[in-house]
Image 1: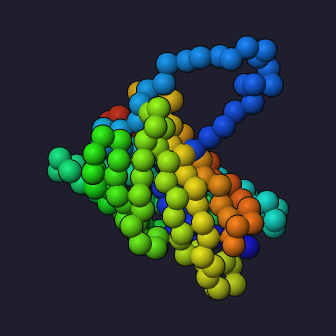
Image 2 (image 1 turned 60 degrees about the horizontal axis):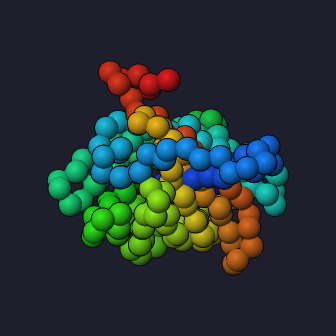
Length: 182
């Protein structure tokens, strides 16, 4: 089953740290503010892994954002490893400290977005087109976490009618002078 980028709307993670450290490990988290990180061009390198169909689909997404003081318009150019391309646009309206309302191409309705402890979460339903041309409506539960000044990790659990069907992981890096920062 080939999935259309609409399924990967925007934008998260967990780790294995607890298995390796007997005591909690603390680190300084950089609080993510969408309008500050995505105002500059970024490149995201991502993968969708389907748990039911043993599917893997790699892609890149280049973003360019504009912020007018209240609304961040984030344009996405997505290229899949198989050569398929898609363009999409997110509109994030800041409604308060760490709170936004979002809309995206291919996503149903308005998406409430919140931030707690510097991590942004959002859930939405997106229309996904399979290799056979049929569409499905999948639920995405995204988490976005800023790892450092130039890196944001976006993971999403993907489900259909409450059943987990896959996971998306995208690492966004800020670009500088047309090149992605290492």
